[in-house]
Length: 273
View (cartoon, rainbow, N blue to C red):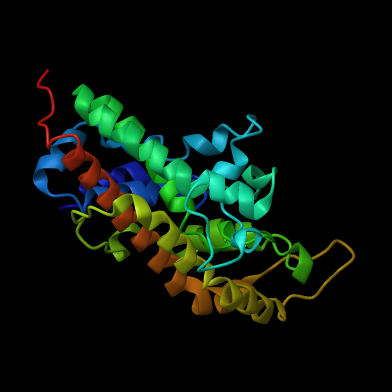
């Protein structure tokens, strides 16, 4: 029964741009990780929380929005060398550091917004703010959001970004098949986005190699490539578990974010209307 309301919210999803289905799935699954007290804030607000999970993808007319969704780890020296402050990022990547991606700092800022929303006492504001936070947390778990060549141009794999985060999600993900660990208190939560990015980055080589292996089934024509059943069957077999793993981790970490924001706000009860 835990999925009934959430399933109804997801059942009619279009396959959009962790495309729309992926982001909505992360939000819906995150609710299942929460203990009763913070979960009570979302009672009657589930639709707001899930429906607004992709909002930041619609803000990209703002030229500063794009880099808020990724971090090109190579531009900052790679895993183990990532800057933890914007000042360090400028030192590492120069004056255009912002274009290399700033998602971990955006997650921190939106988490503080969620703390303020809990303190405001307004469940609708909590749901909306948590949805926006969840979008950026979701993006930090997409391997191709962690690398300089995010869409395979340098390896003749253009379109790999959409094939992985939208194509596979649309073909194999159902909420019932996913299970996220319970949210937990974490005094060091604000330092976690860098760990998520480094973990996701380790998945990039295999992701690219699996796409290349599946693509050997696809003949090139004068119109390019049209990937058929054989490609998707091979790619799903090699990458399906990874897609599900990253969705589950994103949902778990969104649950952690909500729980810890609620704790930081003083563990308040929602206002009664």
